[in-house]
Amino acid sequence: MKDVLIPLGLLLFIALFGYAIVHSARKQRTAKKKVFEEFARKQGFSYLDEDDGKVQAFAQDFDGIGRFWSPSLGKVISKDVVSGSTNSSEILLFRHSIRYSEGWAREWFVAGLTATDHIADRCSVQFCKRRSHKSTMYLQDDIVKEQAFGSFNMMVVRAESTSHAGELVNDHVLKQLAALAKTLSFRPEIQVRGKRVIAYLADRNATIEDVNIIGDLLEFAKKAVSI
Image (cartoon, rainbow, N blue to C red; front, side):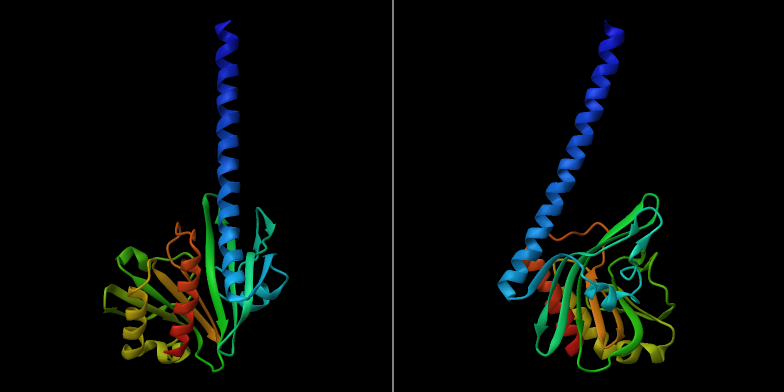
C-alpha cells in the first residue's frame, strides 16, 4: 500500500504546487491590469488589453523593449496599453515581457512620450546606486560618460558617440535628472530616440502594484524631457 500512496502523494503535491503557481501568476496579472486601467480612467486616457500596433511602431528601435519576437514564444504583444496626450505630447504607457534566453526573462513597465523637439539621436541614461547597476544585457551602445551626481554613485550615458547623446552628456542636465530620480520610490532608466523618450523601472524584478507609481513614472519622463 505504501508503494502506491507515496507516488500518489507526490503527484498530488506536484499538481497542487503547479496550480498555486498558475493561480498566483494570474492574480498578479489581474492586479497589474487593474492598475493600468485605473490610471487610464483617472487621466481620461484610452486603455487596451493588448497593443493594436501603436506600441510596436513607437518602441521598435529601443533596446530591449523594442523586442517583439521570442524564439520560444514567437510574436510578443505588449499588454495594458494606455494612450493619450498631455501638454502637446503624445504618451504611451504599457507592460511588455521578453525572454532573452532560457531562464532569463524580464517584464518592463514603460512610460513613453513624443516631445515637440528633437532631444538626442540615440542614447540611454542609467542611474546607478551600485557598480553592478551599470551591467546590462540589453543596452547596446558604449559608455560615453559616467560620473557621480547627487545620491547616485554613478550616472552612465550610453550612445554611439557624444554627438548622438545631445545635451544628455552635459553635467547640468545630468545633475537635474539625478535630483528628479532621487524623489522616486524606484530606480529609473531612460532611452531617447530623436523626439521619442521612454522611462521605465530599471531593476529587473521591480513591479507596479500602485497607480501612483505609474503616475510618478510618467511625470518623471515629462520632466526629463523638459530638462
